[in-house]
Image (cartoon, rainbow, N blue to C red; front, side, top):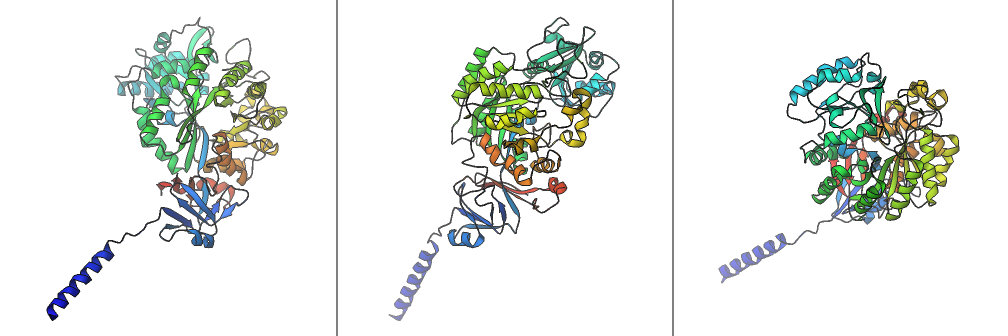
Length: 557
């Protein structure tokens, strides 16, 4: 009897232990980030210590003590040990798919001043790429070709003459081609200049330099010869997206989506495959030489604005003018140098004022916002005129680059609700480099480039972006330059706004991201330096140590 009681006791004890072991522990789907210095970019509560994330949303932001009272018992806790937290950065003008694409076979040194020295590099590239139909390169400065002692066409033909060669200048606003490329493109010395482009000649003879859209047209022909369907996709996955995450960039506007190359379909594949680790708005490229009726119909058909998607096709990218250093930015006055010997010497138009207005009238009603390249004061003026003609401030249109702006046009940005998108990450935008354009545009225009302080003082919404890979995509370089480029500098708080909530506005997502507030999506970065405390000229040394996108940690140093 005693033995039976002992055995029964053992069985009951065993069952009790077994029952205890299978009781599920209820885990929380919350994360608490605490002991931080959080700059929210929310004017009502600019600073906080802690943030509770549930799935992909911020459910609380405030003090450590308040967070402890509100957080679930089993939430994951991350002690940030006093580090600075900022909203995820917006870069509303870059070229991610172009950066990641494997279209070029070789690169030239931009610093090289003697074009003859390029021959060996081009010859080597030809030997290393015997099977490519078009040999495509990148990187030289157009000034090196302008300063050449020989016709640049003779130089490139000496390098390769048996197949087409095209080399994109560092800014992408001109191409250097050989005779075989000109032949395949059907370009002769009697060819007319295309809209928005110039076929350069020396004493009536072709010199192998194709300016702006003249070069773009031939480059499209070269790209179409590539048998590399996966190059752009793989470049995004393996290089671009990790690079964005490492730099804390969680929202991007692609500043030139070539729909004729079906880049929008590659973007859709990335989204479908769950590869996107940032929010993307695509700016469909408006081709200057395309028939308007056909082009507008295609653009309308590609519009896509699903609120639940990381990918939206809801912007149009077009050029009002060219760029300064090759004298194609549109000015009210003539350039002091005449490179092209044309009837006018005050820049060119990819799209005229009336044509821009026509596109806005047709496409803004569909839901498209316009991203307009405008560098010269005439280019800026005409783009603003085109927007004004449509008569609505509901659009989220922006002019990008805005290097030279007449004082009378600055206030019009605010009146028309047009964002001024500036790039100041490149050294060439710093005031100590402004004089370099004086020989082209004169001292008055040259000495006030990219006037972000004047725009800010006039109440204009300013965004800062990179134009990657023209300049670095590192936001801290852009922020440092923005606050140190006196006399056209802005405050640190305004520079951060320009990279966050202002960018969110242009992407029509300011109610979802761009600041750190309860109810918004969890896009934020943790950095290794407090940029509010260090000297301004050290801001560019700041590194991202953690990037959280849509509630998930996508980069951790």
